[in-house]
Image (cartoon, rainbow, N blue to C red; front, side, top):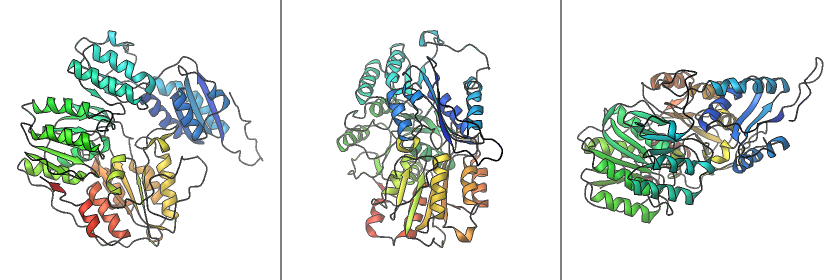
Length: 518
C-alpha cells in the first residue's frame, strides 16, 4: 500500500496522491460499490474514489484514469479494490469510512441486520426475478443459475462478453423467461422499479427498450400526459444489434401482446441493425394491438398494419397518446435566446440516448474528448461537442454521472469559460437510483459565473413530481440559477441547434416534433 507523508504547518499544500487498498477475497455488488464511491468522493480533500472488483477490465479502466498503483495491479479478480485520489489526510478518512458505507447498503424493504440470502437456493420459493449485479465476467453464469431456477433475470452488470449474452438469451427463450440485459439500466415490472427508474403512474402502455434513458424520458412524458405504464422491460443496449438479433425484444413483445391489460406497445432503441429492426417490425405488424417504434437515427419504411415508426423520443410519447385517443402535448416554441460569443454547441449528457438523439441534428459533432484525468485541465475542441458522459470512456474508475457529478461538473466548468461556446445543453435524470439532488452540483458550477458573462445553458428534466427528488423542485432550482428549460430532450436539441446554425431542410427531416410515419 502506497502512503503519502502528511503535510506539516508552514509547508506548501501537498499535492494529491493516488492510493490503492486491496481487500482480499471480499465482495460487494456493483450498486453498493457505486454508492459508496459516490459518498467517498464527497469527502473534503478527496478528488475521486472508485471501488471495483479487481478484474482485468476494471484494472485497465483504473489505469486509463490514472488511478491504478502497483498495489492495485497485484490484486486478484476475487479481491475488492479501493482506488482513491486526494490529500493524505483525506485518504485516511476515506479508507476508514469504506466498511461503514458498504455495511449501510441495505436493500429496500429489509431491516438493517436482517440475514441476506447468500445464494439463489436460499431465496423465497415465490421469488420470480433475480437482479444480477456482479462483475461482468461472472454475470452470465449467475444469470443462467437464476433462469434454471425459473426466475427472470435482470442483469445490471456490464462488460459481459457478447457470446455469453447470446447464450443467456437463447436459454431464457427456451425456458419461456426474460433475460433483461446485460447492461440493463432500467425496468418497471408489476410496479416495481429496477435499476434507474422513475415513480410512474400505472396504466395501459407496455414499453420495451434497448435504451435506458430513452425509456425513462418516454415513460415520464407519458406520465405527464396522463397515461400510465403497464410494464417497462429493458433489454440491454446490444439487443437489437446483429449478433444478439433482438432476442429479448421479441420475447418481451410476445408477453405484452398476449397481455389483455396492455393496450399499446412502444419500442425504443438507439440505431438498430437494419435486418434486426426489419424482423422486429415484421412481428409488430402481426400484433393484436397498436405499436409505436422509436428507432433513433434510423430510416425504416412504414411496415404497415397498426405500426408507427418515429425517430425522436418526444414523437414516441406524443404518438402513443394520440393513438390511444388522448391529446398529445402541443408543439413547443423556444423563446428568443441570446447566444454566447463562440460558434460551438457543448452538449454534456448523462444519458447516452440523448446524445444519439442530438447527433441527428449535428452529426459532425465530436463524440469523445478522451478519458477524464483528475486535476488535468480540460481543453474543448474548436468544433461542436455532444458527449455521452455515462460512456465507459468517462466512467473509468468512477460511478455513472447520474450518481457522481464530478466528471460532468469539470466539463461544464470548461464549457462555461470557453470563449468558443455558443450554448450548453444538459440533461437532469431523476428517479430511484439517481443522486438525491442532481441539480445542485450543476447549479454550483453555473452560479460561479454571472449570467451576463456566460453562454446560455439549456436543460431538460427527466422525472415526475413523485420521484424522490421531485421534478418540479429540481426545475425551480434550475430556473433560479438562470438555466433555460426545455420540456423534452427533443426540444432541447432543436433549440440548441437553432442557436448554432440556421435551420435546414435536411435537419428538419432528421428531427421533428411530429416525426411519425405510419
